[in-house]
Image (tube, rainbow, N blue to C red; front, side, top):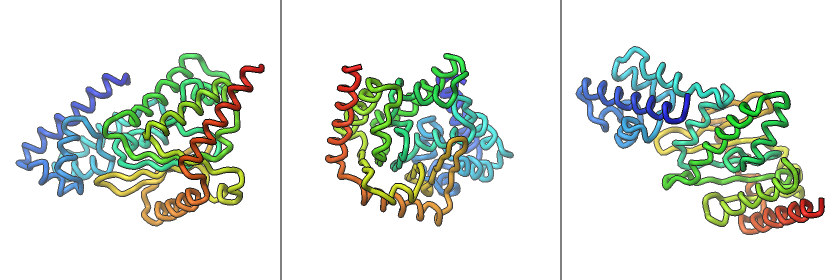
Length: 277
């Protein structure tokens, strides 16, 4: 589904939500209290500014007695084939998160990737696909990053293991531009980037890739990923353990200013390498 038609579909979701809510003689605040979100969130759902989580859509069905209409519609809209099945829901949650904390042990996080870097990663994992497939994946990844440009962008923390700075994904020139991009976002205060150096030792082995997300009116979630699968978890116990692991990694990482200096230094090293080849 194209981005424009997907937005139109979410607007239909919002229009139907408003119609059913008014038919039930409920205000936005009243419906919000029944489904455990604020009345302001209900208004944003109706205007297609925000998209509800699945459990909220299910509770709306229960309260408005709509026989699963909003859950079915949500599942259809969330089924974005540009993303792996296990990741599509994560993309939607990123758009409503108030805070995102990532730890990247091997690759630059998708939200920070340049087109060149994303293209190299996609081709490395899929060497026999068409150019159209690659560009579709790259475009989808860049679209995700738009949340960092929004006025309501989430507070974004990214801890990068030093490995992500040293492996020349896409070649030295592309890697230099990738690191410049991260540094520029950091200098513009669109993210807080920190680097866990090799000297961090065992700290890096405590956790693989993780993404913690917080929301205004929903419990925090944890997303973890391996090469071919991912898990989206909201168990309070598991999320709490992941947050502790993240805090320990953050404590072992360089300060934000020292991290930016290291990122910029690594970019310059790649630039010099590119100029001599």
